[in-house]
Amino acid sequence: RHLAQEYNVENILFYRAATEWRDFFHEFPTAQAREAVARNIFVNFVPESAKMQVNLNNAQRERICAVFEPKQGVPAKELRSDVFDEAIDEIFNLMKRDGFRRFKLTREYEQLAAEIRDNADLLVPRGTAPVEELVDIEDEDHC
Image (cartoon, rainbow, N blue to C red; front, top):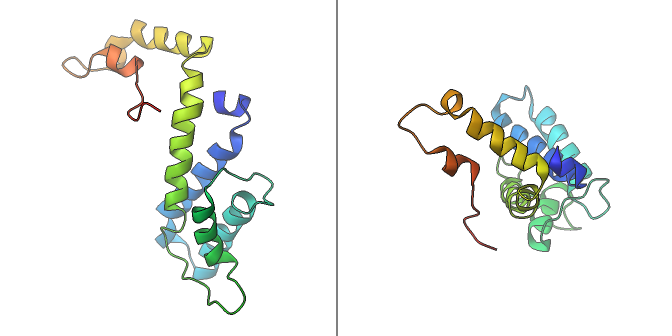
């Protein structure tokens, strides 16, 4: 909800669509169905003209574009299950670094943290990680 309020909904939607597509890659009934869903993800999130363009670096964007929009005279790259993997990782890290860091400064986060602390016995079995470790999540990369 916080990311949607921050106008980062495209990141959530891309992350969800691309990870689900990857996770169910081999379960599509046909290669055409698999490609149609991947192309829909591409068109909506990757090109600079996309309605909900996600913030990818140029190298990643070009690698994905090479699969869906090959340049004149260059054969199209094979559509593989990992076509969106680097973009998925980048968007996840972007949401974690930016969106989550800002979320930790909100009243909503404080309420959630208090609720977790108050219900610790229900949420965490005894002998596992202390509740403080669950609530006070720190970013590993310290950016």
